[in-house]
Image 1 (cartoon, rainbow, N blue to C red):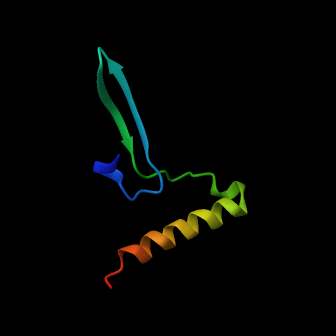
Image 2: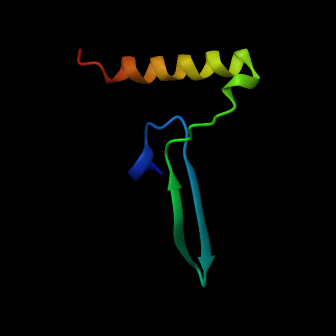
Image 3: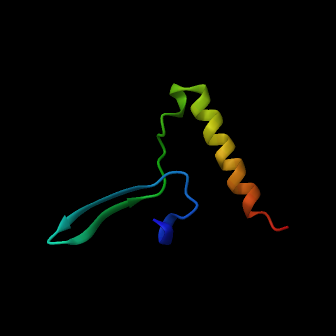
Amino acid sequence: MNEFAKNSLYARVDGVWIEGVFYLMELELIEPYLFLFTSASARNNYKAALKNIIESLKVK
C-alpha cells in the first residue's frame, strides 16, 4: 500500500495467496459509495481527513 496509495483515505486490495505468492486481483483506490450518508460524524471525519491531506500538500 505504501508504494501505490501512501496518502489515500480509502483503499481496498483484493488478491489470493497461491503457494506462498500473493497475486493481486484488484487495487481499488477510489470508492464512490463510502456510506457517508449514514452518519454525520462519518462525513465530518472524512471532510477533516481530506482537509488535512490537502493542507499537508500545500507548498510552504
